[in-house]
Image 1 (cartoon, rainbow, N blue to C red):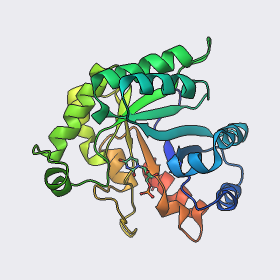
Image 2: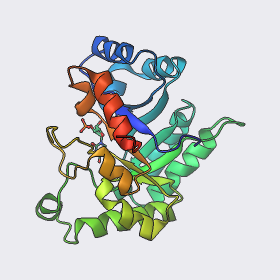
Image 3: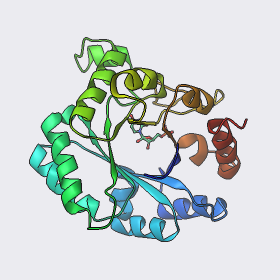
Image 4: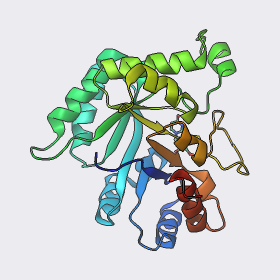
Length: 239
Ligand SMILES: O=c1ccn([C@@H]2O[C@H](COP(=O)(O)O)[C@@H](O)[C@H]2O)c(=O)[nH]1
């Protein structure tokens, strides 16, 4: 992917009108946007086409997690959409992730680069207490994230979704060029909501994150464009 260190806006909005209003307020700026389950299940394939026609790059965040055969076949379909990033849950295991890569490669039209594939390690809404008490995973969270990242790399996946807090550990285990896409980004003054492992844009940069994903700090702001500009400057080390 040619984009260096993307700032990705999660288009998690109640309805189509609100999404169009938000994008209009960005004054036709070319963006990197995230289409999550809420938006995709509401607006379908048409939203991908619309966003591409407007010149935006797209992270299609459907977090596939199923048996290897199903993930492979689904990724083959997604490859035809010409989005920039797609993802799976690393918890699906090595064969499932390998299947995802195979499906993407099979489905990408000749002459086009296949979408980058990343794997969710542990959701940023999870903390160690929840992991141990609810998911019954006894090891420290950082070790689990690092180990899932290693498994993703072994499966030929291009990178992971993680909190920026874990990026240095992932770089140690998987190398600096392994993509790290980090949600759970908040300014110091923002509400955390359901996010547990949060990091500011500046800190995410310092920790070496490749990309960040920002949703509610922007989408619920009175002036989303101004918050975007500020957070993007912080991410780029300009503020
Ligand atoms: O571990 C993960 C994986 C994905 N997400 C997604 O990112 C955005 C974050 O939104 P905020 O409003 O900035 O919290 C959202 O679409 C999630 O589905 C994540 O948060 N954590």
